[in-house]
Length: 319
Image (cartoon, rainbow, N blue to C red):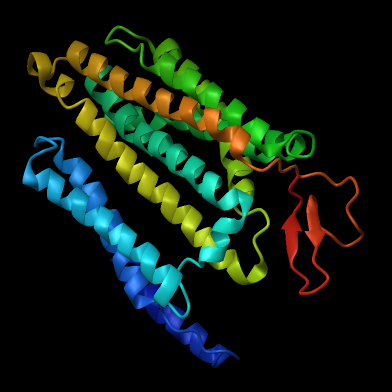
């Protein structure tokens, strides 16, 4: 049963109880339509390159249409929208522009991992569906441990962009190790070892990057900034998966899809994800030097936050 229907009904009931807001906010319908069209067409165009040439109209036209819709979205938001879906003022903040680009690259590398690693365990190593699911347990365990125990300690002592760069490099190392898998690989060297590096790097990267993207955002713009960040990551995942599938299309059909040919093709996919993460690491000097430190915080202010006396907003300290 689709969860959207009961969620929408529940939302309408809850919102109706709260009554009308003090200031009516109009839905930016043109912006929403243009943004959706742009992201859909761009992703579809790249996916078409999996079976058609880049110059083929079935590939080129969606890409051109997506680019045009993206330009139109920017114009509408900047000049015509009374309540923009993405307020242009957000891009004056140091963490929004470069931070969302980093988030795009993170999504483009991390989301395809689960697709290709599932295929690797089943098609290359011959695991069953149940064995594949159990094979992912170390990824979840290490990620949980890093996120709950290690990151809170490091964020008080190390700048976020240092953690982001370190996490990206460590995770790239995990992808490089994962790319070396063969049909003869055992679980420890073929899955468990890379899993530790992938999850350690992903854990070091994710939370600091999220904090960086939302640093300095006022309470009024928090929803728009959060929505932009999540959309960027999801689009990065879809776009990255489409690109990597296109790059590895030949190998998946080579030698009648034998485990050795598939291992080589999936290895190329993992290497491409490693390259994306190295590009992300190279971009980190452009991110704001955010640190979640309690030193110097005024009483009542959260960790690493400055309180704006005008409106009571709290903002992470950016140096």
